[in-house]
Amino acid sequence: MDLELSDEQKLIVDTVRKFVRNEIVSLEADLDPDGSELDPADHDRLVAQVKKMGFYGLDIPVAYGGPDVDIVTRTLMAIEMAQHRAGLYTPCYGVFGGAGLAQLFEANEDQKQRYLYPTLRGEKHGFFGLTEPSGGSDPARAIKTSAVKDGDDWVINGGKIFISGADKADYGIVFARTDSSKGREGITCFLVDADAPGFHVRRVVHTLRSTSYATELQFDNLRVSAANVLGEVNRGFGIANDRLSRQRIPYAAGCIGVAVKAQEMAISYANQRETFGDILASRQAIQWMIVDNEIDIRTSTWLTLAAAHKANRNESFRTEAAMAKLVASEAGGRVVDRAMQIHGGYGMTKDLPLERWYREIRIRRVGEGPSEVQRLIMARDLLGGSFH
Amino acid sequence: MKLHLEKPWLEFSAERVARLPGQMGVFQLADDAGRVVYIGFAGGKSLFGLRSELEKRLGSAPQFRYEVNNQYQTRWRELLMLHVGAHGAVPEMNGHEAVPKLGRLG
Image (cartoon, rainbow over all chains, first blue to last red; front, top):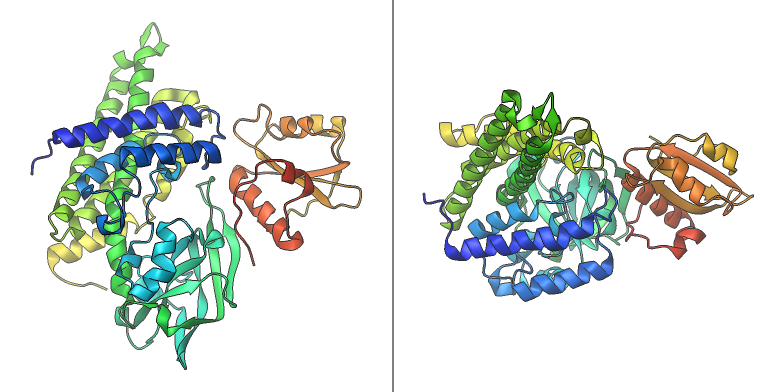
């Protein structure tokens, strides 16, 4: 596999890097250290700039008006876009746009008219409702929310937890059990309107990620038309699973981006901070931390680009994506931790972005499937079995 | 953690505020009847945390209460959402400032 960037990729990476450093980082200096939103005027100005650059709506397929950027290049861009304080969870404050819910591209034309196109126009916002209080790592078995057919409708009862954006959404993609006698073959995916009777946002769930919260949802006899079944009845798990695999590559890229920036800060500080008559960089303890950081960053980058290359060739990339996600999330945490250690007291303060990354990157070892589940996915592929 | 901020109201005086911690957190201001007129937060850019943020607003209301909370951004949004849910709008004094897009609870 050739990991050398093409001239076009080098140009794109350089363009995004300059955009992040010149436009995003400069605005961020005036924001709350835990902030996640730009001033609306700045946001609109930068969106216009991104559109002019031809990069707006990166995860939107070309057929729907998205830019023609392959997944390897998008991964390289995602690494750059994460290199600022809010970058791990809000890369470039969303000014690069995006569809968000890739499953909608698989919807039928009627559903696309009602949900996909308004979403692409920015008129509607959706959420992804999979995880339940009974568990998120094994959705095929953990989903207790039920959907029962009643005439032309389905009636949904149950709840979801750790759902981002549901309180502000117009609709959601919700997974419910439609056949209790089956595991993953008994789950159906529904498009649910958030203003429908029986849809409740029960509470805000506060996490380590202090800039943004998750929500807990409750469905009480929530009536959904049969026309809102996404895909086929009892075939919803495939939709969820496909999304989870695809998400792992940009998820890994975000961790790498933050690690790259933390390492850059650590090297800069080590070269200027003096202790006992010499700079920190002269100390072997510090040198080894810097080297270990670099090994973590390069390992994560190579594995993530390898996954992206396989996805780009339309080959199965499940094992590679799981490996990239596992390694990048764990390695990113170690890099940020070492960078904080090198910065000493300053590393603990809100003056620097390290403490925010430290909190947020911890979530990455659990989000989109914990490290242990990534190992299980790889074990299944390597050993050729499905284990319980 | 309780959803609503239910601590007793304190007299919003310079003496009281001077004894406040310099930590991050959220606070509410109220009129004499205990009607919430402002919900704010003290974040990472507040020089002396809750103390500085409340000092800035001395004289704008007779009562206040606060909660030390490192998750000040999400807690602030939660309190605003609860207020909108109960009263249909953000508190009067918040209406004069930029408020983020709020979700709905309930």
